[in-house]
Length: 287
Image (tube, rainbow, N blue to C red):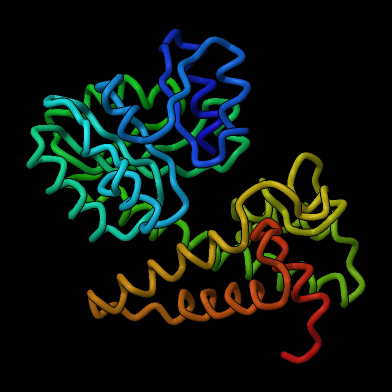
């Protein structure tokens, strides 16, 4: 995700200072003349507008508060935007640490996947001090079609977690529906067409269909390679589960979705796109 996001900043004329834990990920930026440094702290020393995109809460904590983290060399007045999807409580703690250093922290997780990142059509859900939103919007607008202010720090994460829980539920529902229809003798393309002109229509059916051969340009057309990994979906559903527990919110379908994606990871689907739940349902006969 960070790669195409950075490229869109380049297209808008922003010079970049880049760090990635995997040096090879920075090679094309180095070849293009951008600065590549050896730690998050080095980024903070050279830049006062920093965007992070990381897989987990643990990675985010390390990038900001670790031995070579951003907070070791952050400059007063810097704007730090975290576009990772992490626990809202972690975002709030990082914001406190950043504020003590005289800088500003905003959480701005994204929706839309790698395709939207490449085309600059991501949706950013932003939490933080409202007075700083305009500065964040200027940068995020280079990478996204929608930049939405959600409220205080952590509310961006809250919105993203809610979105991804619904996405997981509707993807599983779409996969179950398509599988049932196919086994009842319906052509999958015809069934998808009917769903998408009827009340069952959703993003998982009309934009990201999980059935191979129904749509081009989606992971199901490429053996579920690329896209949004099953491991990441399981992680996000875990965040939803934790948030539901802390707020005493019943998430019956969300909990079931979490269990399904955890089982998929255990069954060898961890590196496949989350729409591979269709393949999982087709192959598992023990439900």
